[in-house]
Image (cartoon, rainbow, N blue to C red):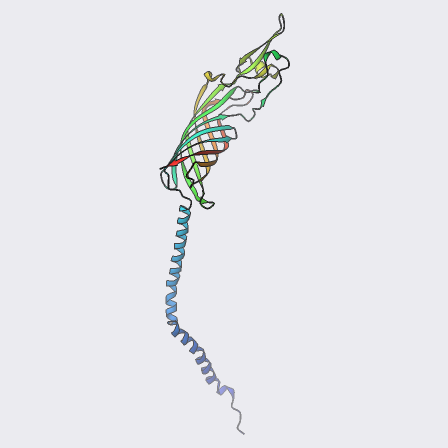
Length: 300
């Protein structure tokens, strides 16, 4: 019986066999795929192609956002609208001209009534002197009606051209211009009683003054406000300026009357104090927040 052969003698053969069996599949894969080095060389070009493809998609998406919902069928627009302000109301006319796909400039003519935050309309029954007629509503302590006539110029910038399937756009408007404040005296029907020889009452329509302040600011002598046209020939004009900023929401593909909703802030300043209430501090400026709606037409 032959002595056993130690395993260490076959170790080089086993190692060589394992090495050959591992390299053979690798060489086969190298042949079938054009070589391992060729794969390494091709990787940068494939990465570049993928990057270029991704960049192209981003560019297409950007162009889509810029064009989506953008109506290019007009270059002029004319609209009329109204605003509800935190201190009154406004009616306006608006003309717009496009200067690019995302910008336009416009002119705006607006007329506003400014009300004081403390003014409250009230009315009482005329029981004491029924012969003088029924009482009318009035604002206690009010001495002037304040109106603003404003003409301004501004720019509109398109922010989002396509919202809600491209039917609505969102823009920003900035404008500034001239403001003319008009103060119209506020007239009241004041009751005067003559006790000699008999008690006789009469009405006198008066505006506020130092001489009649005791009656003007006493509800017991007030029968109501005079008609609005009373005092139109006594307007006081106060020049000034204004600035305005608004967020604009409107349809871009509507071929009929456009409907524009505006949410904004308004500020005006004038050359003197604008007195509205007798017992309240007056200032030369007025500020407000507003929401507005306008309709109009566009054309080339």
